[in-house]
Amino acid sequence: MDRRDFLEKLISAAAAGIALAACSNTSNAQTINSDDSTKNSDHQKESTKKMKIVVLTGSPRKNGNTNYMADRFIAGAHEAGHEVFRFDCAKKDVSLCIGCNHCNMNGPCIYDDDFTQLRPKLIEADLVAFVSPMYYFGFSAQLKRVIDRFYAINGQIKGGSKKAVFMMAYADTAKSEAEAMTAHYKTMIKYLGWKDAGMVIAPGVWTAGAIKNTKYGDEAYKLGREI
Ligand SMILES: Cc1cc2nc3c(=O)[nH]c(=O)nc-3n(C[C@H](O)[C@H](O)[C@H](O)COP(=O)(O)O)c2cc1C
Image (tube, rainbow, N blue to C red; front, top):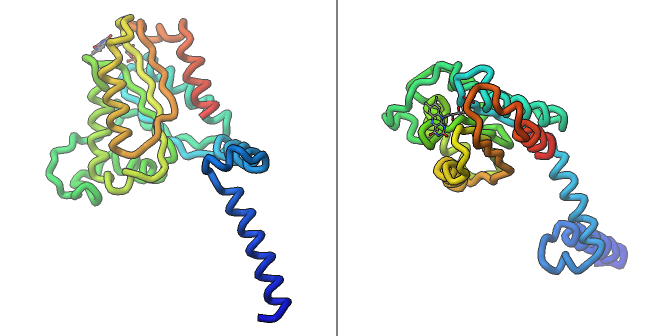
């Protein structure tokens, strides 16, 4: 190797070293100022990244509380420049999964219904929002039947870097009443390998539109805006 080759290799090795240090996320990085600024700019890039968002709503009440939360969340997400695909499960023709296993958890489903339009959106989504009223301590059946159809794309949506958010409303005022539904959401996304990006839980709203007199609309907007 002549002197020129040697110098070129040295320069590119040094450049690679700088790049590696910049990408480092180890505890050492926290003690070096230049790495801190890199981390900050990485964080900015992360938080300003435009995402593909799928919003799944579960209420059949058009002017209901969770549809209002979804509206506010979507307004915030649009404000932040994200792309949103809304799927109102209660208005869609989605058959119940019958567990025939034709899809083998990663293939074509025997049904060609409205889930067919949702399927590719879910696969490419960066974030999925689950928005449901509490129906006897769980998700509404309208939303749950759509979640069950995830089975046919399980192999394509599990893992990766997806995020999720959860919004719910219910009539009772006790916070503990929300625990079963929240646990369901958390357990489901843990299984799927998705990261929780926030929740809005609205107790004490019973009649359609009652949520407009609460802080939860603003919370949903903020979640969409800052996601
Ligand atoms: C079938 C059904 C079941 C419900 N189950 C519960 C319940 O278990 N606990 C509760 O606090 N409210 C329950 N509610 C009240 C709703 O959760 C509440 O009215 C909620 O705000 C409805 O949201 P929406 O307006 O988005 O449909 C139920 C309502 C219906 C229609």
